[in-house]
Image (tube, rainbow, N blue to C red; front, top):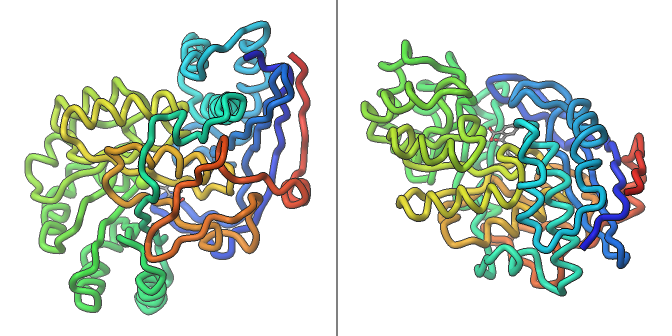
Length: 369
Ligand code: OSB
Ligand code: MG
């Protein structure tokens, strides 16, 4: 397969509700949608999940665009791709910029799957027919609003509830949640808001019967997390700290976590995501698929990845309607009884709704290879 053309679209979509983490509030989502075309006219889609502001990782929409246009896409020129795993190797000399890499790599995976009449799930080696889904609820103005969100989410059937915490909005909040919802499968995500100075506070989280504590400490740390994990009964789940399969290997070796959240964008694509999945599986570390407030294209890739066997915990892959009035794919992703059926049609298994896509497109760059 040869990629003959790449279209980069910049999109702007407004989420139904603002999403607040320890690092900030997002509602107006700007992101990239990549379309690749091969020499036979097959199409493939990928989503660039970087935010407008570099507060989750150092990438932004603008840096992704720059890296894609000036480095990654030109590297595909003249290359014959037998298998999408080769894209990861082609990009090897470019350091990090994982979300930019993932955006185009995911599009190549979709294109290759379609060309070979395979679902992306099958192409990745996934086997599940449905995936379990949880929901990530951002920080809210007060407990009543949060409680309502939790209640709604339980009615929808989500298999676990994740709430964001930050210093000053943690133990009291959890006390209130546990009083109201004593048995709900619950976890928290701190997005790196604490340090080892908070050891006593973090130890007190053990009393809340949490499934896990996601990324309590610094985004680039695995040493302090190992110290913390030794002191905690609750499993630590790493998100920001794991950017590659090598990172996963080292974190597991050090005992920095007992669970890993895999995000395709954060780790540079599906090939690396699969590698992390495999290493974790061999080490008895369960994984789950994280979210980046994706639109439909990114969501579709997340669903396909989650069909791999060691994605044994519910992911942050809620349905389209949890984020958008109207998604850019057809059909939209629907969660029923806490599960999403894994599509079996070719490629990502969803059609891109070109009218919706165009309605949100603010810029298009077309690159002939
Ligand atoms: O840390 O998992 C995170 C959203 C934006 C940035 C980081 C994170 C999140 C979420 C929401 O938790 C995931 C989603 O619903 O897409
Ligand atoms: Mg997280």
